[in-house]
Image 1 (tube, rainbow, N blue to C red):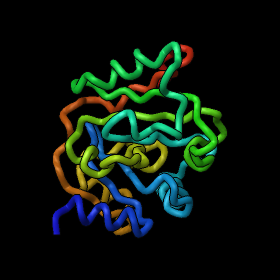
Image 2: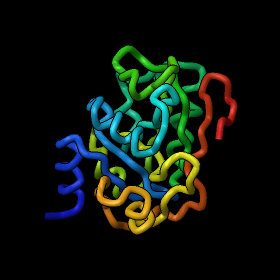
Image 3: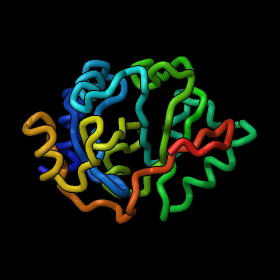
Length: 181
């Protein structure tokens, strides 16, 4: 069975997986499965109120979850996602369809369109949780071996190359234009 199909099955079964992104391995799961998200947060030792990033293969996947379109800043966000040589996450106003276990204590949610072929294949037309594969305070994993060192057998790792960027995604606030990371 190919790795993408295996990853899809695991996600559908409520598992947390690790997968390569542009710069580091990410932890992911179905963002609409509250138990899977809470398991991911426990693995990371991260509080639910901090919120998580959602990743997609194309901006349309965020329709219904965010107020992306028809805003003063919409074109800047959409244009930034066309550049395959950078990874930018944007904090956007959320809608009521965005689960609180994703947005945390915020009225916004961080989202990113990825150019990494594995991430695009995992997302398809939907969205996936994307947070660095590391416990709080540790360096993000850059190999499946590091993922296994952090999480032992609690996370299945899709072993494939990273996307070649040196740093994880920048995070910008769309409404204020402020860089957050």
